[in-house]
Structures are given as structure tokens and as C-alpha cells.
Image 1 (spheres, rainbow, N blue to C red):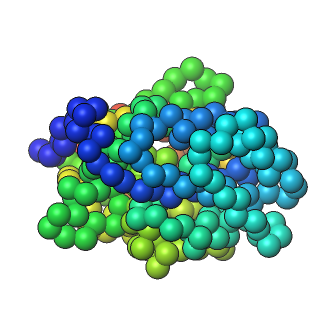
Image 2 (cartoon, rainbow, N blue to C red):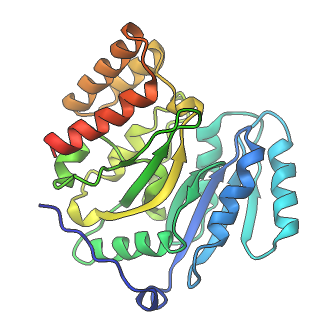
Length: 285
């Protein structure tokens, strides 16, 4: 059975002085950037937050959107971390990591939102508890996955999961619901040669010493499908995923099933993802 950390009251939350660097990747999606930044701004304060805007775009639209948003509201401390040319999203994210100054670090894409105003406090509380007796690199909470054009949604991990350690052998958490040690992230940067959507190694490595205490059993963020990273893998991306040393045999098997099922059956990718999550969570974890 998993150990579920109880929800603190608002008064308890306010006693936790925390500082978090939040990397927001714009990457050719300036239209949804405001929603992401507003969800960060709405986090209850005692949070000391610094927002690091990573670009990874091929033009200046994201930078222009950032400037407009922060001119309208100056409550957030933010920095735009310029790219040295369009080298890709992982280069942009590494650039932000290297510029982060606070104890823990989170990653959000333009369009992602926190669904509670105490999401970061809950994650940081989990991080503190998990680090009482040993060094934990990352913690994670539940994330709501929402289809952009097909009206279904589900949570990852699912509500029925009882064994988080076993669940981690099949899945990795969504990065929108994760909080990492900044010190660890600086020593374990993203592989800049990986294609979009092949960042499982970074997440798996961060959770190499994770257990039930690393899990905050609360929905903390929302991720909308539709971007490149959430589309069905092509053969090149599949090859990269299968070669990742941190991916278990079970996880590789499900990647193969997902790949060939989508190729052979005219079924929505979202449905495959949803029921893969439900079946594994209900019957295996």
C-alpha cells in the first residue's frame, strides 16, 4: 500500500517558506503563455518564485508575448533566458537550469497550468518530507491529461494506484507535476540530441531512488494533449525510447504495443493512452 501524505491545511501551507525556480518553455506557442503564467502567479505566497522563460523558438513571438504579459502584471519575478540561435527545446531548458538560483525547480510548457493555488506548496512539502532521512532528487503529484479536440480526460497516476514503486516500472510521471532538486538538475542536464518527447531518461534518472514518499497523491497540474511530444511516436522516436537505459522491459513492451496498435487500428491516440493508464493502474499497481 502506498503512503499517502495528508493534505495540509491552508494555515499549515503558509508556514512553509519555499523557493522555487520555474522554467516555462514557450517554444512557438505564445498564445497560451499568459494562462500558464497566470496559474503560476496565483500560487499562494509564501512561495518565493522566479520564472525563467526558455524560448527554443525560431522567431521573436514568444519574447514579445512574455514582455506583454509582464507589463500587464509585475507581481512575478521573471527572466528571459535568451537562446544562442534556435538550438532546440532541450538546449533552451538546460540554459534555464544553469541560470536557476532557487532550491527546487519545476518545468512547465506554454499552455500547461497548475490546477490548485497551492500546488507548488504541496509538492515542496512532499519534497521536504521525502528528504528527511535521505536525499530525494524529485517528487511528483497527479496530473490531469486533457484531450485538446476529443473530450476525454484522465489522471496520471490514476486514483486506483496503490503501489507507486511498481507503477514507476510502467510509467514516468508528467513533468508538469514534478518538482526537482535544482542541484541535481544542474548535474544531470537534458540530452540536447534527443528528439522532442524523449525526455524519459531525465525523469527516470531523477526518480531512481524514489518510493511512495516521493508521491503527492493530489492533482496538481493540467496537461493538454496536442503538442509534438504527445503525438504518436514515429519510428525514429520509438527507437530512441526503446534504447533509453532507464526504461524498464515492461515500459518498452507498452511502447511497442502502443506504436503498432496505433499503426494497425484506426483509433484515437488519446484513447490508447487513457486506457493503458487505467488498465495498468487498476490491475497491476
